[in-house]
Length: 76
Image (cartoon, rainbow, N blue to C red):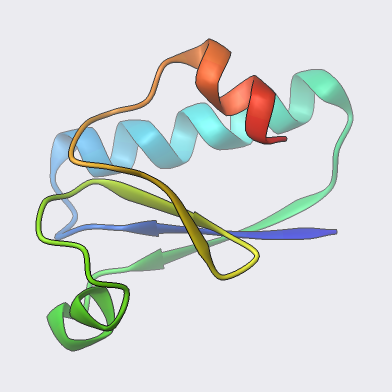
């Protein structure tokens, strides 16, 4: 099981990113756990300055915008 964190303030793009990640995982039949991180201290610990950002298995794979469905599919 992959642990995927969506870093962000809870804005619309952050919520859409979390929904997109879950939808792609469901399509692929992959079990994931999504954590929404909105604490700025935790976000800064990943050296992320713009959100939304996506962290998979503690590695930042995307930041600064909502990823595309194709990008998410490659990560999962």
